[in-house]
Image (cartoon, rainbow, N blue to C red; front, side, top):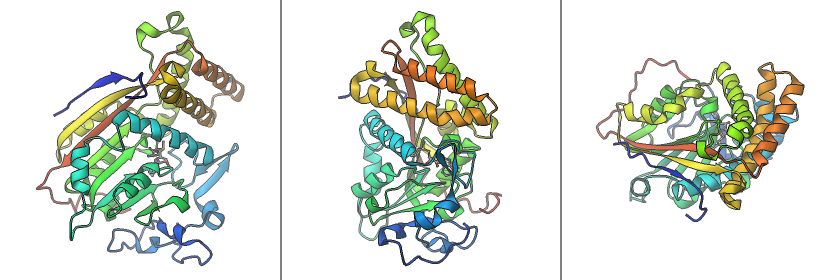
Length: 369
Ligand SMILES: C[S@@+](CC[C@H](N)C(=O)[O-])C[C@H]1O[C@@H](n2cnc3c(N)ncnc32)[C@H](O)[C@@H]1O
């Protein structure tokens, strides 16, 4: 059943194969692993992936520096930076997105039941595209008996903050994730669509990673901002340039191979998946600008200003001339900061359970990872 509930937010209340463990790294770094193309271990990780990650030593292998920002090297389909500034943006966004759903996840009764401590049972959580890791770290703290694994092209974790029941793998979620099949009680993906080449297939792979009865939680939002028609200024002139620039950026990212449009029908994808049941979704419309309150609206305004700057290189790579891009970015930033503008961002939250009698699909015809 699809319980759609749309509301306007205005009140804040509401490898290479490095198989050697470096002796020089602190123990906390031993939570990071790099997936190789080869063997898998019993706990689902690659044997070669039992590798500690040391930024000083390994940073060059996973990151590339361009135009003053740092990017992941594993898959350049994902266009946004992987650096301190971006992770701060994600951290602020995390706070807002928790408010949208009243916590870390929707369907709290089901999730809490699935993850409750039970004698003799291991609980497992997977976070696809974990980014700065806030969600997975908070989940690991909330469920200390559960094992949490995050996968990202370039995880931006503050290693010292990683709880002992948390680890990350450097990997591409466009791969089959075969080593994770049937292992997780909860599989989560939030805001990673820009690096996904086929979202329907990605959703299917997430479902395959679930134990029967496990729950998939997906949260996505297009880059495009919207403006309620009755709130547009000067017939929408102020907003038009902002909407246009995000549209160009989305087109460029789509042209590079990301399945950008799929998330416009995220609810449909979940609804139609044959192994999912108890489907629920809602759309949260979040104000972007101080008109929506200093906390949520203000945080979102700064978030989108940072996002605009992160998208500059995307437009340059798509062939737009640098002076034009600079001018757009300046005017879009001005419009985003305008006290008159009434931008909103739409976030779709979906969750569903894997049917109980489903067996892991061992032979799916997919190439190995
Ligand atoms: C916008 S951030 C969101 C991070 C986190 N999920 C959150 O909500 O804070 C998107 C993250 O997804 C990761 N990502 C995108 N495409 C990916 C892919 N194909 N494989 C692995 N990670 C990917 C990026 O590296 C980035 O860290």
